[in-house]
Image 1 (cartoon, rainbow, N blue to C red):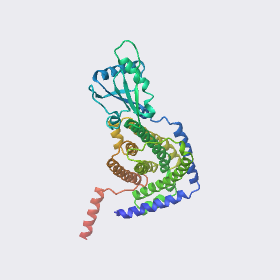
Image 2 (image 1 turned 45 degrees about the vertical axis):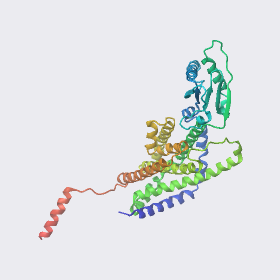
Image 3 (image 1 turned 135 degrees about the vertical axis):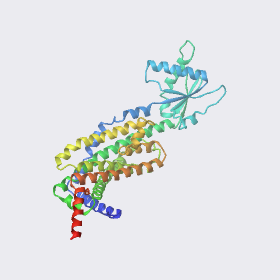
Image 4 (image 1 turned 90 degrees about the horizontal axis):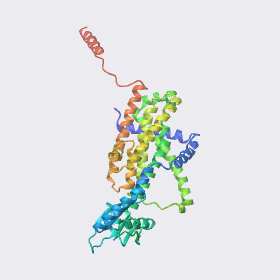
Length: 412
């Protein structure tokens, strides 16, 4: 059995060989130009995850009034929303304020557990509304309408709403972080779909000119698979560096017109590092599967036949992770976090919304384990089906013949 450092050295030799061969090929420039087309497709398909955006943008207004006023306001909201479905924001009672008791709406807006976008206080005759500057003015008329219907007087008069503006709220931060999570998933999917498919045809040429047999005789197949996988990862990172440089230049040119983005929950520096790590793991997981599948193909035509189901598989993984983002706290989210292929997408979205660091360490270790398992399983399958080799199985009849032959030799 070859020691692990020797396997690693063999994998690095294969990685360097394939990396240099691809980088200095004439077609590499077309590989760099290729992303223009999926970027256009991604822009046209910008409504992916619309359910996530709708859930993130649905406002929730907290109510801090006397008990009777709060109940009447909720009943009025239910009646009005029944007539005009979706026009009125959700109401949740934060506190039933006793007469003469004060309530700090700013504290409620900064509470991460309540996650309300604005707070209605005061009385039905003189309501107050506290919320973020850019949204609170839009809800003044809705609050006045609900208060007018909630009052028991027969005359329909709309009270004036006193407005208190704040800079931000937890609900607004959570909403923008959901957009960051969704956007990071889309970018990760586009990069993985664009780059991981190259691994499918990695072994076809070497199987045709018998180079694969020479390599298999010199080094273990799992080391060869790992080397080829890391070579294509290196090529992909070169491409991303070129595209990122061009994108950064465009941002510097027109950066003043870009909207300000809320920082993800873990902060931008750590989020960028986790984005790189999760792209690496998503590529290695998908690439190890594709390398194992593509290793079964003998011609380019067979690779082209395999490309369609492979692309559909990538789409299903992305849609699964996107759906899990719209269903937080459910079994769907946990399944997307545990399933190895969708785990990088789900964990990157989690980094945008949750500040804990330790789950990412566990997830990365889990994904590395599955990369090793898939590579070893793919190498074993390749050895048995393509190379037609493997550990010899004991033949009872043969053992018996050899034993009889040996005893006869000893007798003479």
